[in-house]
Length: 94
Image 1: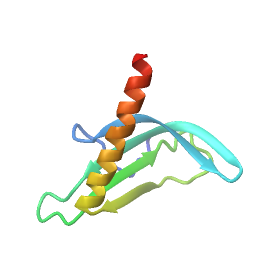
Image 2: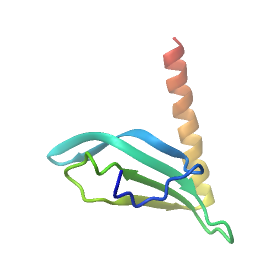
Image 3: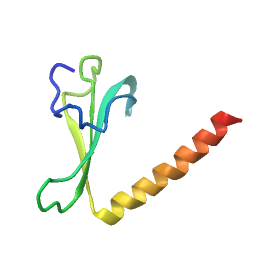
Image 4: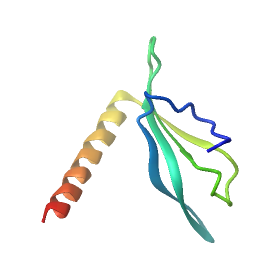
């Protein structure tokens, strides 16, 4: 990801995950960086960020998506992720 917009370091939540970019007339598998963060001083939101690897992505220009979540929204998302992680874990153990 040579033209990366996100800063990726030892504190990045997930520096390489499988991703799919979908559009009305395309679907392209690639890699992505995903990060959850908040400001160090006086945080007012949780930021969920992700960026697709634009070295293989041909349909979209280099860009990063960022959601600004309240603490309640972040906890709702975390709980839903936990629920689905449990389902996947149970299915793979069977």
